[in-house]
Image 1 (cartoon, rainbow, N blue to C red):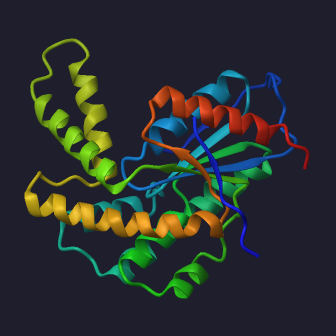
Image 2: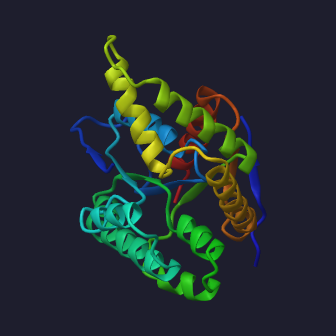
Length: 257
């Protein structure tokens, strides 16, 4: 039965503490943040992690394409001739499988909160956008752990393009880190650019990026009802989005099993 869509507006790290959480969850939780490129997932995951850790929760974060066994292979593949969609699909699945067994399941067994920056829905969207069979892709990830909640940071493909242009311009502008803080800023911008694999700006590059984001966007729109995503409008301020996520997360943590 199709679930009703809900909408609300408004690098693996492990944190532990012996103190008692201010608000104790009823059980371990797997929380996923999804969205197209540059929707703000990574920023929001880091803010949620810091907020929960400050309240003495045990928190583990995991991110797409960070398995130590697979990340270097994917990095090398991106610097050479593009792989076929099937090869990318299998590599990304291997990344998710490794993180599931090494990070996600152990953390949940310890009773922790796991925050995931992208999950299997990214694979579904990307693989299907690249023309792979839907049922084959879904079956490939049959081993995965079902999340307790999926927050979909919704932005339009046009907004993704605008943010990409702005990010690339900022990376180019910070070329001489002589002033205090500029070196750190440059590294942060370069890491942000790397998350969406930014090549040099060119009209054909931007058009290709926009076309792919349109396909991804279409897939996410279809998955909203199928997987009961909670939709958060990602074109609001970072603080507003974070406040919305915190309210929703508190409700989830205190919800009886």
